[in-house]
Length: 133
Image 1 (cartoon, one colour):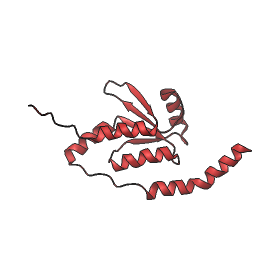
Image 2: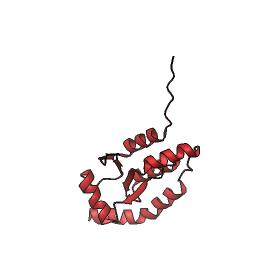
Image 3: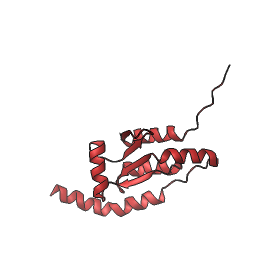
């Protein structure tokens, strides 16, 4: 009975969550093309496993949009292959989850929206130049 209640609640709230996600999407920051190209290249090594109506996933997607990060989105809710990949690689079906592939092919899985957002903010921050004194 409780499962049925929450399923019905999700069905009722889903359109509102999707509308909120769309309407509240921030505009991305604009960087010089050379810097944006470098960030775009780094983002090709990233993939975000998400559920469309998960509030924590929406929060991460909003930050990706704000930071102008073109990260591949993988729907782990409705795509069985992505769901299986998330379980096999990350060890659990929990979203959001950021898959980070390094140059050598090693993979790291980041869970928790706050951790993912911190990683994305560090990725998009320009390196500070060293000052020789």
